[in-house]
Image: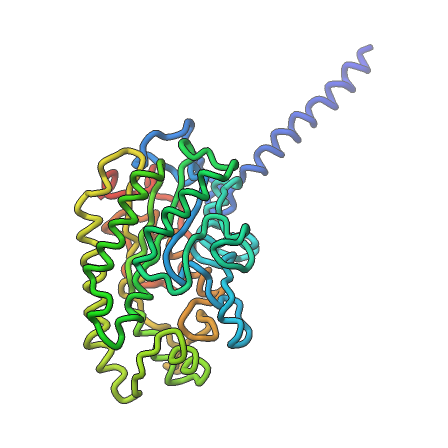
Length: 366
């Protein structure tokens, strides 16, 4: 009898240990393993939100979020929308496989994260999930994108629409700038501000428990420098991406004289809108500007030549490597307080761990 009790005890202890080990392994976070980043109960305020509390990820905007041409091998592939590679909403593969998109990093803190895109397709495909961004998405399309996104979430039984915390990333401005390269009055900054306000007003009223990451418009004209060093890039950019009909001798002068100030006007009015506290009126919605593209510079190699290794075949959109880099940039920017947010791209950055108790907003951390 004593022998049986001893044998039973010998079996019991290893089972307990194995169950505990399995639970620990399941929740292990290889990026930040030393702390729990999930609230003990579901937060009721967006200003008391931790990264592990996020249940749903989404995005709207322009081709930067679409993943345009990210895996393109030839010029014809540039029409493909590789949404699974999108820095802001893409969930192809995993962080462990070195795909460092924003959702893949976030999944380290909540393996059950929902809403990220996979594979290839437009915004209407099932695998696009909650990536509602459009190719050549002008700011005027934002409010319809927002409406479609809300409707899609409401219909999805995997989402507890009222209770689940959501992160929505918005990219806007690039298509407006491209449409203004011949005439800066085509898409003035006031238009972008008005369009963005309509979309954000709708989201604030119709998408509960949401933190919006708003990527500041950036100087797309800088990317056109590649058109002078690569024939394919020249064809792609001049044919359909940003056809401004420029001459090499006038490129720097023309674009820096009118597109750069227009881009700065875009950023200025976006800041004016967000810092007006228009979106600080409730506890379940806020907008935070992420400015890491605001003053980006092109990467060059040791010989001083432009490095296009982060760009798709058109030298305009990011490739998978570029999206991985931008995913880290968005993640790091979101975790930094206002005064510590970077206004430039760090091409060699690695993901950081949260250093504040809650995700920084305009209200909880200055």
